[in-house]
Amino acid sequence: MKRLGINIDHVATIRNARGESHPDPVFAAKFIKQIGVDSITIHLREDRRHIKDIDAKKICLIKGLKVNLEISTKDEIVKNAIKIKPNFVCIVPENRKEITTEGGLNLEKNKKRLKKIIYKFKKLKIRTSLFINANQKDILLSRKLGADCIEIHTGTFSNLIKLKNNYSKELLKIKKCANLAKSIGLEVHAGHGLDYKSTKILSKIKELEEFNIGHFIIGESIFYGLPKVIKNFKKVIN
Ligand code: PXP
Image 1: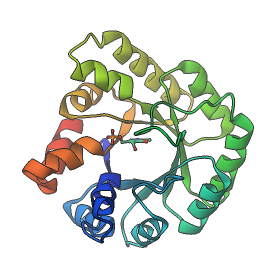
Image 2 (image 1 turned 90 degrees about the horizontal axis):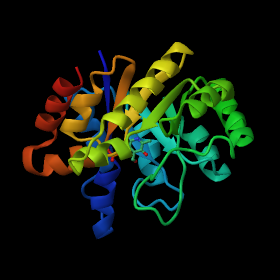
Image 3 (image 1 turned 180 degrees about the vertical axis):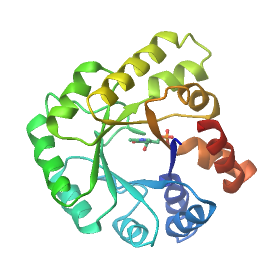
Image 4 (image 1 turned 30 degrees about the vertical axis):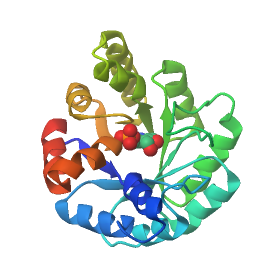
């Protein structure tokens, strides 16, 4: 069975638009747990534009809920993540001006730093994933750095589908990378920009074990509600 992780950053985005407390991402996490998903993803960004420290702390205290915390490599964020104690971390690149995470990590440039961070989480038995572009060099390096998993950035693939362009080359790249990663002992995840169509196509790749999806699910839920949309995605991935 492939796993579904729901990114609830956008619940916090809506809350923050009013500077008040509704809708509460902690309530969203509890609500989604009851519907039954495999994990919740939250991104504690350096600029705290959506999820705040207090949200992350409270969400990580929800019993029986697996939390995947996305973090940058900044010291302050890593220290907070260690205090917050999520079940999983996913290390992502961060750029203050970006609207969302635009690509995978530059592993080569940050390898020393990443290795140290991964080691810290390993000691705490926190599963660590690296968010990378679909390229074989980064997969081999992820393994060398000690990561447990990789999450393949599916933004390019998703955009090709949305624009109704030919996606076969990009799909093949993802397939080959998933295959290589699995063969060297990495668990393989996928995320970014996914909707029903792109997820359905990727769900055919047997090595992909986890999908992390946010914006489309929250957006679609405005019309159809979270329980229905999550149910649909569970069907799509398996
Ligand atoms: N996975 C990672 C590592 C991400 O950074 C994001 C965006 O925060 C997602 C998945 C979810 O992307 P989207 O909101 O486009 O579904």
